[in-house]
Amino acid sequence: MMSGRVIAAIDIGTTKVSALTAEMTEKGPRILGIGIAPSRGVKRGVVVNIDEAADAVRSAMSQAEAAAGKKIRRAVIGISGRHIAGFPSNGIMGIQGREITHADSLRAVDSAKTVYIPLDREVLHILPLEFILDGQKGITDPVGMSGVRLESRVYIITAHAQTVQNLERSCEQAGVEVLDVVFQPVATALSVLTSDEFEKGTVLVDIGGGTTDIAQFTDGALVHASVLGIGGLHVTNDLAVCLRVGTAEAENIKTMTGAACSAGLRMHEDRGASLPGETGQKISRQQVISIIQPRCEELFEMVGQEIREARSHGAPPCSVVLTGGTALLGNIAGLASSILGMPVRIGLPQGVLGIKNSMRTPAYAAGFGLLAFACQMDGQADLVRNAEGGMLRRIKDRVKKLTGHKDFLEIMHKKKKGVMYV
Image (cartoon, rainbow, N blue to C red; front, side, top):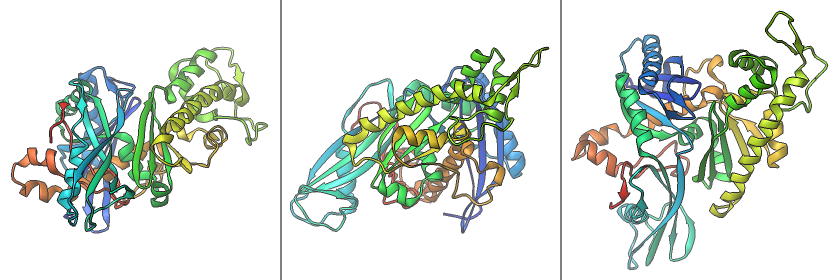
């Protein structure tokens, strides 16, 4: 990885678009500039108006470039939405008793890729979970071992192909070349999870404006992923309807007065809000929380159901990490812990030098995670440029090891539709 290179990442959310740029140093990426623009043309992670989405991306990138003092025309972008789906797959190959090579491990993973993918779906990631050698499970790296039968278990994440294309077109129309499209929690995990959490088992819950991303990690691997169609905007809309105020006013009340539940809070403090209008009616904090809490409880009940459904993929998780803008709600970790029955903490972005305190919040975890992902891509750049076949080789053969978490999320292959022949 060469120092001095500039990398960029774009987080296109339902409520905001964040563009981040960083310069590679010997100690890791150092933030250069950040641009933030209100999101337009995007609903629940899906582009519904390419022109408006392109304008929002252009605005955020212009701010980031101005702060960095450099023109940047290529970036990694994140994707989410209920169209995302993941499923496990298995592969097998014969070794004939000889020592296993790195090429053998790649072929074992390749054998798990030959599955039918509908023509309207696009593969985002194929993530190795484990290898099984002659019935012995839990092997993360079989190279150097000897055996007869080598099996691989992988987790495949797909997205609606047209949705991916519309997201790419929005960026291209804004003058940005898309280097890679990344399922958001894959990147966010790099920003907020610790090595112990990857190993022992953790559920990452990223509560965005329109959707909530769920990713469960066990033994250093992603074993289950899903997207719920509920987010922070649903809380805002509940307040707007119940209090009969505008969306902007409801968002302000939620931010200044709201909490996920009242347990443990000092309710005697005057933290109420004044409603707009000539009467200047006051609403207490308890009333605000009574509107917010049912929606938060619904969200975590849905998260709990996803965790229960993922039990077949490995050992149950030991903890939950909440991130995303809605994770800033007061006492949300306490409510989540009481419903899910396990420790819950708030995940803050780490791993990038020069993060200002004002940006070290859950709201920007996805953006900094994408930047960390772009950093790992940059580490493979020389191999890509020197490889025969150029971009085709890059798409088909590259292997990216992210952050050293026990071969966490090696990305082997992408952008294949229909039956995958590798």
